[in-house]
Image 1 (cartoon, rainbow, N blue to C red):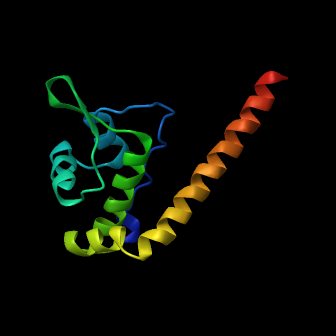
Image 2 (tube, rainbow, N blue to C red):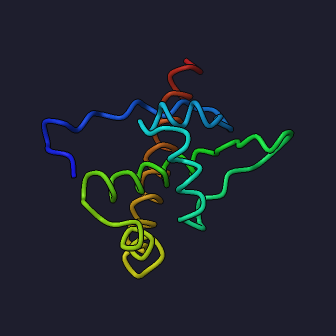
Length: 118
């Protein structure tokens, strides 16, 4: 578990549709092999695979990975415990939080659009 002084702010997620495994590794501050391992352990994490079996992650995947990272590295959950938390009743509260984040992002983008139109 990381101490408060060891925690680093994760970089902002760019407004792209797809991210490579290298980009996601940087955005979530984990190694690519960790992401591949987490795909095996967390069934809800399944990036799109294209030519040559290359992985392409979407924004919701990056948010999920950050959530997994927080559970494992900051809150001290085991893989099994984190999987249960994400798939159980507590995941409903997390979904509400994600929906709020999406709504906040939409509101912020609408504000930016209004500024750009003027």
